[in-house]
Length: 271
Image (tube, rainbow, N blue to C red; front, side, top):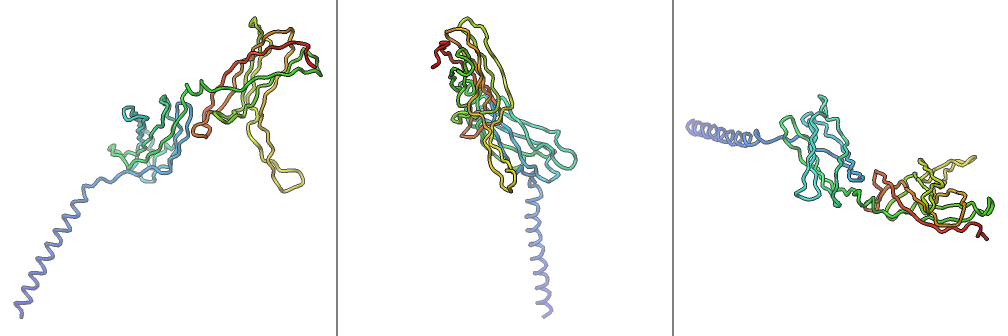
């Protein structure tokens, strides 16, 4: 009987050694596995004019020490961005960035990584965004210009109207405008520029009530009046500060939509 117990003990010991060796083999397999730095989260993107505004949430780990971004419109147009001065000893501090010189009329892909101290990449986070090109901004068609005679002030006083500043087909009104009126000889009869004009509706609390209501303060048309000395052809040059639309949404940046319209005015013909 003692022989059987002895043999059983030796067999159990040998089996234990084999099992331990297998566990060590499994453990050894993972001791050299790369432990990635933390992944960026909650990436947001906002298109601009030949630029993109990016924002994100950084990981909380201490292993992530750098921000690395790959971006491209086409596979052969790959660009990279690296910032290795964003680690303050406890976490990455950079959580937003503007990337410019995006000249292609196409959607850009952005891959965001963190890097550790040895430049090992984290798992990437990818986002696509389409900025507006400057050429598209330059090609935007501005509003029309019209005029009426101001009989209350005399037939020679003409009120000019720059129409429909809030047209949201290609761009939205951004609250600034400039204008210049010249005659056929190029003489400047009037010019001006205004910024900070209202562009939105506003919530207001009505007196004596607990309700709040929307009051529309957006300017649809812009007017200026000028005394016209004689009949002839006149030219109105304008610049309208606008925010172009990308995929139906206004971009962050503003551009100036320029235009000119000629008007034939006959002084004293008001009815």
